[in-house]
Image 1 (tube, one colour):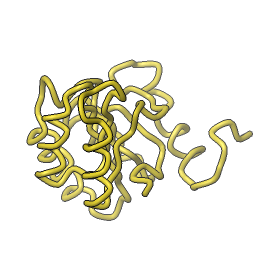
Image 2 (cartoon, helix red, strand yellow):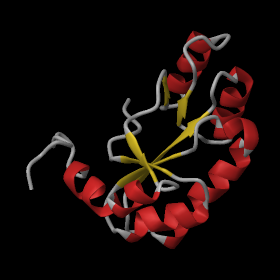
Image 3 (tube, one colour):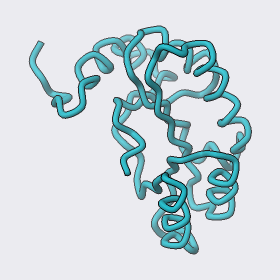
Image 4 (cartoon, rainbow, N blue to C red):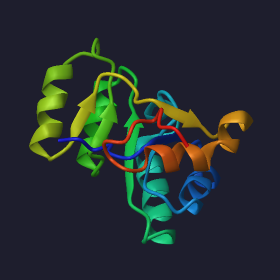
Amino acid sequence: MNCHTYPAVVVHGVVDARAALTVGLPVTLLSAPAAALFAGCGWWRALVRRTRTEFPEIAVDDILDCADASGLALGALHIGQRAIVLDPGAPGWRSVAAIAASLGGEVLAQRPDAIDLSKPAEARRLRDWLRVAATQGDSRDALS
């Protein structure tokens, strides 16, 4: 299962998520590195739920970064998160991955390529990032 078929954008809060969705193209919302540790799984699910409600016409995937916290990863899966990043050295990684798969989700061993909306230069190229990579199978290096 591939829970991240759209270009990824790192969001740090609802303002960033809205900015990513305002473009009007399919997107994967990617949490900040280790966000599950400092912001929590519930916060992430609420952010995703809120932005999906505000932009129901936009196709959205989302990925929560759990760093090396297997327990938090399991907690995230328990409350409905289907795509997580978990360090492959985390205790029980294979078990967490098996549980995720049984729920129709996946565990990524590394973060996907993404632009980070906290960086002004990357935020300015958001539309182009999403436009070039929006169609599955297209190269992110396509010519304009």
